[in-house]
Length: 231
Ligand code: DC
Image (cartoon, rainbow, N blue to C red; front, side, top):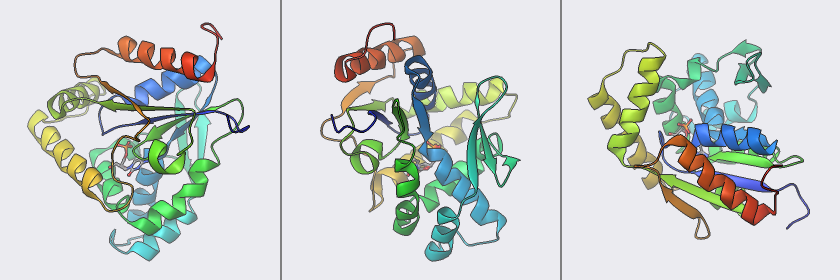
C-alpha cells in the first residue's frame, strides 16, 4: 500500500446502483465518500444559473474550479449538498441536471479543474469513490477497483422505480432513451471515457439485488484491504 489512506473505486454507467452501494460500503467501513457525479451535476447547475452556454469550456471550467460546495450529513444521516449554502441535493438529482452534467463532463478543462478536488477526498481512514473514471484517472493506484454493469433496460426500470417512489412522474421509455444517450456520450467522449480499469473487478448486477451486490463488494474489500469481517 502507498502509505496514504486506502481508496475503493466504484465505476460504472448511470443507474447501475453505484450510489446505493457506495453509501452502504462507506458506512459499513467508516470511510469517507466521494460522489464525483455530484461535482459534475453541481458544475452544470452553477453554470446554467450563471447563464453560461454549456459548450463554453473555459467559462464552465472556471465555474468548476471555484465551486463553493460542501457535503454535509443531514439529520437522517443521508448526505446533503450545499452550493453556496443552498441545499441542492434533490435539485441536482433531476434528469435535466444529469443531462447537463454529462455535457460538461465531456469538456477536458472541466475534468482537469475537478481533479484535485476529487483527490482531496482521500482522507483517513479511507475513501469510497463513486464515478466513471475513479479507477482509471482519479485514483489509478487505488487498493480496490470495482466496476458495475447492468443492462440499459434494467437500469431504466430501477430509475423509474426510484422516481416513482419519490412521487416524481416518469416515463419508462423516455428514461431508457435518456440512459442510452448518456451511456453513449460517457463512453465515447475523448477524455476519461467510461471503461473499466484493466485491474478492476467487474460485476454484472442485472440479475442481482442490492444486498447481493453489497455482499460481493464487502468480500473484495475485506480481501484486498485486509479488513476484519466485522470492523
Ligand atoms: O453519476 P451521475 O449520474 O451523478 O453523473 C452525472 C454525469 O457526470 C454523468 O453523465 C457522467 C458524468 N460523470 C463523469 O463523467 N465522471 C465522473 N467521475 C462522474 C460522473
